[in-house]
Image (cartoon, rainbow, N blue to C red; front, side, top):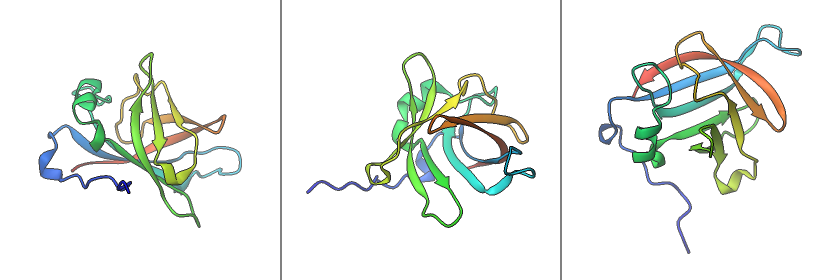
Length: 136
């Protein structure tokens, strides 16, 4: 039987460009103040312009992970994937049984505190705000 759990990533083995980015749901209908409990953690390399570094992603794609946080539900885990044409998406591990969620223009987005990014979740676009960025 094949082990389906990802190998642990040792922070000391990753290049210094890797960051942990937390994005939280921004204001939208039904959430006039946003919602910090609806969030994602993204582990990815950022370049000098604070954009996802596609070259470093290719070299260390196994380390580029995501966690989807929702209130009253277990966290879903997966990987940051690079799509044909240059886009980015969240691909969930097999146990999650979820479709990929596509980042809207993630290739052009800067991941800096307070900036907004959008994610297509099940055919509906939601806007998130970068709430924190930290070194690993």
